[in-house]
Image 1 (cartoon, rainbow, N blue to C red):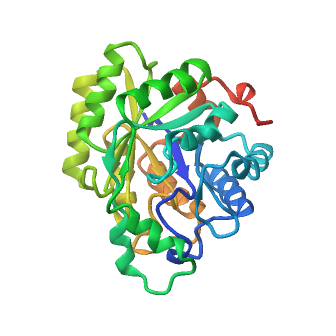
Image 2: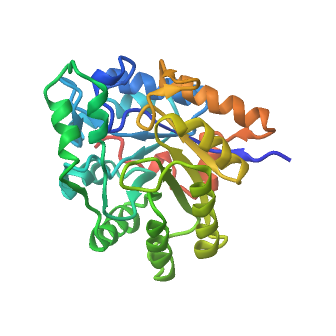
Amino acid sequence: MGRKIIITCAVTGSIYTPTMSPHLPVTPAQIASSSIDAAQAGAAIIHLHARAPEDGRPSADPAHFREFIPVIDQASDAVLNISTGGSSLMRLDERLAPARAMLPEMCSLNMGSMNFGIFTLKRKYENWQHDWEPALLEATRHTLFTNTYEDIENILADLGDHGGARFEFECYDMSHIETLAYYLRQGKVKTPLYVQFVLGVMGGIGASAENLMAMKASADRLLGDNYQFSVLAAGRHQIELATLGVILGGNVRVGLEDSLTIPPGKLATSNAEQVRKIRTIIEEMGHNIATPEEARQMLCLKGRGAVNMAF
């Protein structure tokens, strides 16, 4: 018997820059259109960042989110998952501002501080569309992405206990699973946990089948039956490790936030193209994709009606 598999699509993020792909959505209209197309292709959850429309730099300004959230809301019933990660160069209050305003059904939550190195991408390009692009990449050589224990606890209380959001717990390393298990023992997180295994980001665990299986074994030992998981693999490993995640009993995340390419290594023309690719694999394995309403039931979400879409 096949399972219902949740596909999350992360449509733009804060890692890749406009120079790297002409298909990366950066304006509000592009983000909205790309999100709607991804949902129509089969994504039950849309993971959202914003960008400044004038030059595509990462933004956590709620005003920028307001330019595309209502458009997506009117055209799709997908679960809208708002990033609290923003970018490593943003202050905590800045990163949390959109979710605090919107009170979404889901938020991402990075389970620890880490080196988040994207400076190596700089060497692949010479002619930049905007001066901020190489500067942002280089800045990650000497900055940290910071989520202290206090930060995590404040986010859980503010957006979870107060706002009613459930979390996509982003675990970039084995220690992040240990941290999540600590908060489970403390009763500070609600089950079922939705754990995102993140592989292939410099500073976190590498993208390999062995590492994914180790993360799954660790989560099984520490979290027991209290969690479901999804797999996010950066760059060229996206589809192959997502496929392994399905084999191991999990769900998947794709999207141009995580990888600009699609096998056999060409630039993906859209987020929907990646969604269709992984959907085909899922269905050929005998599984079915979850609808947004099925995803809400699986993850015990509060429902679209409890979201502040008028933020």
